Length: 244
Image (cartoon, rainbow, N blue to C red):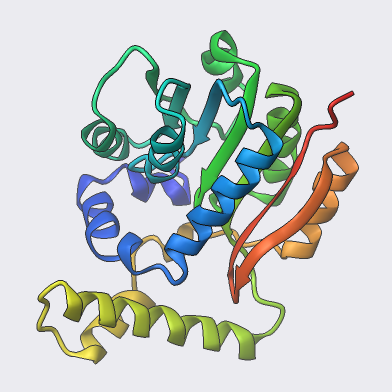
């Protein structure tokens, strides 16, 4: 049976996202800065990380820039996204690319040879899974971490009200239009807005409340659980596996 997130296997959709959406995400540089600060604090001697649902590898790329010799594992079920990650990161003995779907626990067999990890990061990927699978995945990630390892999820979460959802939508449209103009685009604002509201991947989103997901992490026994940065439906959250 076809899943809603199978649209991300499309090369055309992947190109559209990478060229016109990813660069327009509000607070993108701040999100990565906070992610790196937390990784440096939790694992100053980082040796390995997993970029789960890596897309074009933008999060892992930032980590490799700060820790050039570490081992990075990049997993995604979309071959076009993995191709983009390879193009961004190049090849090397410390970079491993895995085509695998993490919708079931079978994905663990593919990453086990590289585990345990100092850090697991994920960007705008896990929200495509049903809530039951999200929670199970957070527990699987916990087991893959070294003691003291950190999990950071840069994620799309649900709004607590329609009023706030509308503000998020307006922010995203304005940000995408500004990015479109800055990069030489000439399409009118309304056309950019229509593209956002009627985008083909929208049906693949299964958004969960931030507070609920933080509770899941606490129940699994992550510590220092918090939302570290948030603007409407965009949130960087996670936790640390206890060192003992």
